[in-house]
Image 1 (cartoon, rainbow, N blue to C red):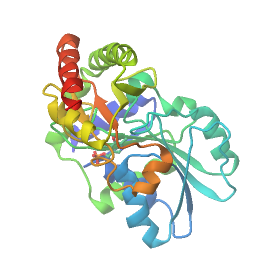
Image 2: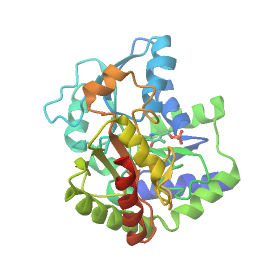
Image 3: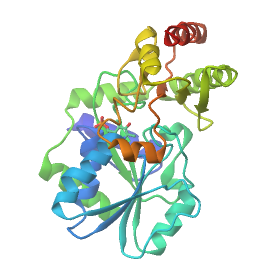
Length: 315
Ligand SMILES: *Cc1c(COP(=O)(O)O)cnc(C)c1O
């Protein structure tokens, strides 16, 4: 399909790769990468990856004999064991927004003959281009910032490795999780404003972070220093956090992220509900952790909305 080809070429150019391969969803793109492996192969994966990625790895692929270990890839001393076939990194991570030194991780992966895949959904190529730092594969859920308007679902893989691109294209054709031409058109149209949208997401997020860091009702603000994703821990219990997310009007209560409109969610009971509670606790996803996808509305409207939610959370 020519519209899909246009999108694939556009994404490859944005990430500085030679091949782009598009799918019907971000998860279909994740699925495709793991399908290049064989039973018995070992994958080292970040420990707070997107909940759906975690579920796909631990339920669907663990069952067919692919082995996964979950480690903190943001730890500069992390070791990649001999025999690893694939390292799966998300940076910044979701929802704790931890960052990884991609170049150093790529060197460690390559030293044991493993490939490095980086899920670049949160950063977008505006803030980070993993292929230029040694990654072999870049993944996007184009559902998020690339599409940018919460009206299309899609995914993509970008690489400069010809052999990998050949495998991805064969799987795209054999498995059939392809995007339709209309989806590709909407994504291409979204990408036309990616740079200006990201600048505004970044500007608004930085202003909200500075404002929240001064507040007594916030225990912690988590922000990687760029982009539109902000997480914070509200003081109080889960009920207070639920009151908070129910009170906002500009920040719509919903999963997903990266659209022009602001979204708010509670990872413990929404995006990361499929991660077992003990695992959540061990990696620091508190019950009071609230994730914001800061949109491009006027900053005064965003601040006013959160201000009244802080009041509502007090009950
Ligand atoms: C949403 C998301 C995915 C999955 O993408 P879908 O398009 O929803 O299937 C993968 N990784 C990250 C970081 C995401 O936010």
